[in-house]
Length: 352
Image (cartoon, rainbow, N blue to C red; front, side, top):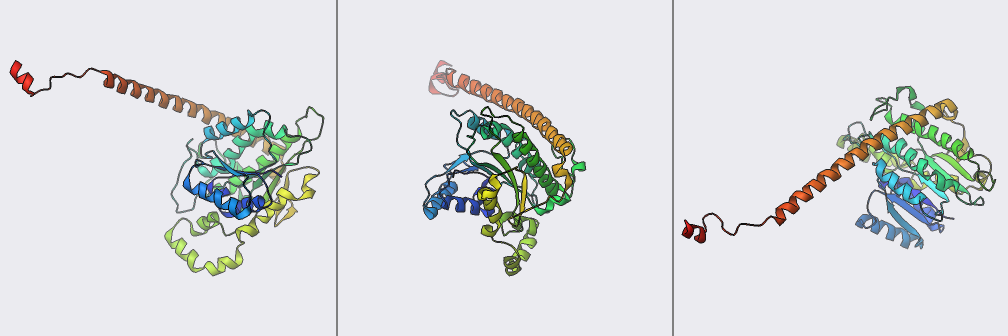
C-alpha cells in the first residue's frame, strides 16, 4: 500500500499526524510528508532518519510546500499532476491544522489571510482542486482515499457569518466555522469525484472520509487549552496528571484515521462517511450534506483563490522588476571606470 501524508510540520511530524505516519511506515507504506521546510532542513532530516530506523522502512520522503502560500501549493500540485505517467497516489491524509489561541500572536498567511481560514479550508481547496485529475487517473483496481480531519467544535460553526474578505470568518467562531466549511467541502469534493465519467467506464474508485480523532494530547490541543498565555501553560503543567487521564494519547487519537485509511468496509460503496471514535456516525449539521450550501461555499472558494492568485502574481512581478532594476544599477556601478586621482593624493597636489 502506498501512502501520501499531507501535513505541515505540526501535522506530519508531531501529534496525531506523526503517529499516523509512524504506524503506516511500520506497515511498509511509502510516505511523502509535505512540509514548508526544505528536505535538507536538519530537523526534518533527523526526523525522517529516526522514522526510517524505528520502522525499518526506507520509503519515507519529504517534499516542500508551504500551506501558507497558495502559490506554493499550486507549484507543488501542478508539478505532481504534470508528471507522466501519473504518479501513484493511494491515499491523501489532510492533517494540517491552524488555531489562533485567545492570547496568542496573530499572524497572516503570505496571501494576507487569517491562517485559520487559509490552512483549515483554503489550502485543502487549492490542493485538491488541482490534484483532482491525478486522483481520477488512478487505475480502477486501486482503492484511493482522501481523509479529512475535523473536530467536534464544527457543530458551533456559523456559515452565515462568512464574509467576502481576507478575514472571512466570524469573530468568536473562527475555528469552528473553518472546520464546518472543510467538512462541507469534503462532501462537495466527493460528489465532484463521483460525477466524473472514466474513459474505461469503471466506477469512481476515490472515496473521501472525514475523521474526528477526539480530544488528544497534541501540541494543537495544548495551544488551545493554554490560550497562548504563560499562565495558561503553567496551569496546564500543574494539571498535567488530569489531562493525561482524560485526553487520548496521539497513538489513540490516530486510530480513527488509520481505520479510515485501511478499513476494508470503507473500500466499497459511496464515500463521504464520517468517523468518530472509530465508528461511522451521522453529521451533527445538516448543511454538510446540503447541495446548495456546498455549491455556495465552492463558488466562494474559487472566487477568493482567483482574486488572491491575481494579487499575488502582480506582487511577484513587481518584486522581480525591482530586483532586476537593483541588479542593473549594481552592474552599472561595478562597470563604471574609477578615477585614479583621488582628492588629496600626492599626484593631484603636484598638478595643482
